[in-house]
Length: 287
Ligand SMILES: [Zn+2]
Image (cartoon, rainbow, N blue to C red; front, side):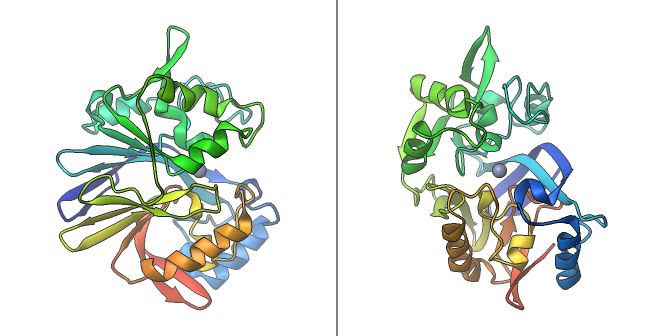
């Protein structure tokens, strides 16, 4: 189990999947040979984030921030029983909730749910299927949605149009009265606040954790793979606005690359976290 301590706060990973992924799935023009060329220029990308045959090692996980009082679940993966266009994500029947409970986090104990953005792989466990209805998985949590992000996806088809992501994983939370609309710099508690990182989606946020002089960041999808740390110009085909995503990386990375802040990549393969330093035209992640 991956877990990190930041002052008085612990951050625990509950993975739903760790999968070697074709680069073309996320970066339209990037071949496996192109990935290996990038790994040649940035050797630290191997073996954790890029395989020897040019695949990307991608995690889908929930990160639970626990300060002893609040238990904040950041991003809720794909979820079970969802009808999805991507057959790897359709009608899952995984042990995610059992894994949460085994890690000390039964669903009733979660006080807040934060979605860095409202894509399919970040909202799935917001709800679960009970007697044919989508009901909130975390009955005692406030679900914090960035207001512009919520408004955008309320009116926009999902990444894959026939997936009703908003309808099965976001709207039922609002209908149940558990949703709070918040700003992109929202403070959740004394240790945890949002940092606006738009571009991947209009209201995308990263999550900052600060305690006892230590600091960590949860990236969300402003970088899908550490290749985007090595080269902040590299945008994903899933970015709503690829140029805005580049601008965001160039704006925030200098502040994160102090060699001390723990950067936890929402989709980065294990060990998932490291510290950043400037390196060439970009940065490197030291794990
Ligand atoms: Zn994602």
